[in-house]
Image 1 (cartoon, rainbow, N blue to C red):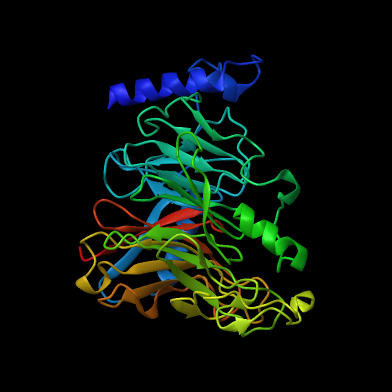
Image 2 (image 1 turned 30 degrees about the vertical axis):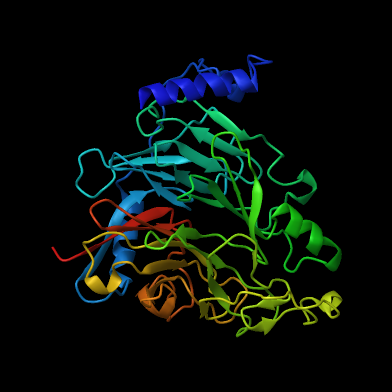
Length: 423
């Protein structure tokens, strides 16, 4: 493994050139040189009033019999998570400027240390985090992709080895950078390619942008080599804003969530859970959102003459409107009962434009023997108060730990929870 790291690093450093400025942290770190003089990284306080209040709020969460939920870590703005291959460590992305390294050093099921990862880099919406099979850590920002060799072992200081996979401004054209739908997610497929979800920046994209966005993979899934960014291609199109994906380890199909069109009322259109089986599939948007026709609706009157995409693929599951399904994961552990093994957990962030509010829960989706979806049911709820209609938390992502427990991130409370079964 050491030879692989060394050879790859030397090749990529040579191919990308040397630093042009001593103040350029990325260029300096690509050469494995020191960019930061202060080696001490501050840690996030894990005890005190805030932690106590969050633990008290967790008493309101309803789970099936035999399950319990506890506070795993205080992690500000916690979004998507990536469980490290070899240690009790989790990398956590945000929609701000920080990637968090969360470590359970004594293996007791509670994180002991939370600190920023590679803080000398200028991250911009580093929401997407994932690991390659060889232990390289990938961060997908709004408009850049970075890759960090052996990050779970060399993250103690502010400077880490880094590979620039896609330079800043080259994941999408800079004119389409937006505060809207800019959170990416990533996974590594069995083909060892990096898959990236890329939401389109409109509520509904205008007619003159549809073909261009499909060509660029905006409102779709793009895949590429996770080290060089080479062999880049659009894998799937016809999405609005997917902020969650995972591969089914049994058949290799790629599943992903998609957020629905806003401004059409409380009950339409539905949220989506989709299944990609091959390159080139079109999932209907912006003509369809679930089985609701968006084209020509009040949200997209300029699309009234749009032709239906041929062979549109419809969702496996349609969720209640505006619950905002984000992160998802296949449950690969053995701790939970057999019913849950091989199924899908989906995090619902909760509505922002629905009255009354809805969501802020975790769904479980079972699968049929043929690998398609069976049904969805609520697994965990209680982050949305039925008495006041206010949120005490907003789940973002779900991840399975090696012991079979499950983590849930919450960017509203700034925390990660751990769900266990049995003792």
